[in-house]
Length: 434
Ligand code: GDP
Image (tube, rainbow, N blue to C red; front, side, top):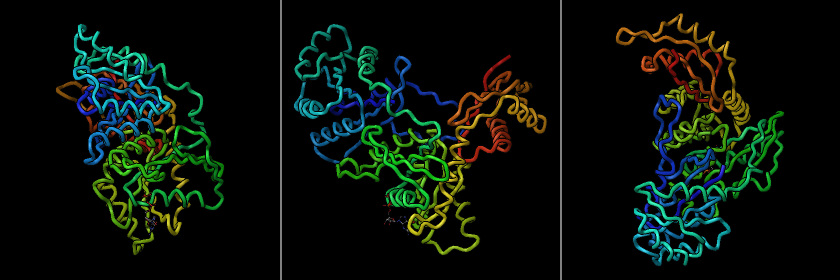
């Protein structure tokens, strides 16, 4: 999937345009609110083409002077994006900061589309010619506030998307990434996995852009570890900012079948862990919770159980995620990890035949009859699986309003009991069918 970044001075209207382009993204059923995503990275769509959109203005880079910040935003865009939308303010003309950004963008080999924002009425359109001088060809007049000109702009953006060649996921390979606070042991765990016995490692050359993907083969299964923030430190200033590491994590999550959410056994669970785990949950990926640094605890036969209870209390929205306790340092219990990743991945992609699914649903209803709301009883007609990764089910009913949260939850549990979706979220949607 292509990535587009929006760059421009403060107040040129970047986030207004970001929000316009992203629009209202409707996720199929979200029962338990995870953590709302930072509004700097999202999916968007134009002419049936999906792409990722980054608002570089949302990545605050300390209290550096404006020019410095602009430079870093431009670098982030150049690092992360296939196409860059450079936004200037049509009411103010070209400023020194615009020229500075233009210079940087110019040096990259990325396609740059120049958008002149705040062109709110047609009379202003002839004033955009001065912007040719920035050297990016035809400027596109737009109005974020009024939603004008965005179609033409997107037509141009889409033209520059790389053609699909690489990046085609191999169906049998399990892609996974590791996320977690700094110092939870992400790099250590990657290294430990790569050095495990009977693991064959090969770098994948020329994979997506600048990401480092490593392929490993164990027990007849291919895996690819996707690089996340922290694994590849190039010493750029913005790499240490929180928003940027979140952005990197989101991008890795997006390409993953399974996400390992790392927790540090030594320091315990922190608020930030919950936020990070929320990203993976929101993205609908398979999830395995990994408690690392297990070697630092004095353990007895109850420690694991107690720790698990603590995790379950903190991460209620991840009740489907298995927990693996291990030490990247001593490699204790490390061998339990990949088999769990495999289980989560298989469940994430699992399809249930419609007849079997309906048998389970009808049995569930026989056991616990559907609720009645204001004298009207919920009637379930039939159910079918409509998607995988994650598995999503549509249940056709007489009136979706009658499908209570608690009854939906009950059906979800029955589906889980019957088919064992350990390690993956599942989605359930009620639709009207009379
Ligand atoms: P990252 O920032 O998440 O990539 O974390 P690192 O892999 O750089 O690890 C941070 C620190 O934790 C390093 O000093 C590691 O040696 C240490 N560490 C990582 N895994 C373990 C572990 O299983 N046990 C112990 N005791 N230390 C660990």
